[in-house]
Image (cartoon, rainbow, N blue to C red; front, side):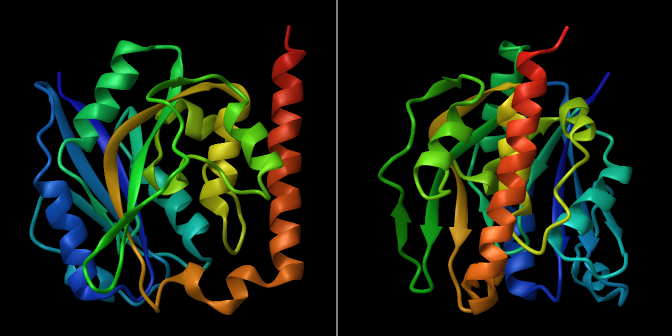
Length: 249
């Protein structure tokens, strides 16, 4: 029996070079015996142009859908996800060698861990890479740790949601990514942390591209009214889940 890890990518007018590099970073992964990957690329729109940019590979599944931003596109992609694990990859980012194998190993070895994250390096336009100076220790992240840190550090998590790998059952139970115009990946991470232990791998798992065209670089992303609303609903959802979990049974 072959196990599958489903890599989910939302794409809205992607830069062809960046999308190709994302694919190459997947193609170069070496998985444990008995495992394979599938790449589900969901266009955030209905032009069909994204599919034309993808290479010929039977493990790639493309789809289209009404424009609703990344969270909606990723959640639609879940309908075609066959894997027991779901890994997120933005269309302009790159996986580092070995990250899928490390995600799989953590979740196979620790059956009561629901999700994993990894160290990130920002990939700057000049090709240089910059790391984050406040990564948590390598290993298990106790349920609620990420949420508490986020709440007490101006809504900034110490693990990066763009590196998330999560069990299929958990992401489906949480309803996929939040229906927000941005920070939908943070919303999923906080919800997962509210009800499940996680895992952090200190080895770099993602090159997070910083460039003028990325959505988080636009003024609307930090507009005070919308940003405040996003943080409030993310926090309220995660706290409600945590409370329900604490009082279950």
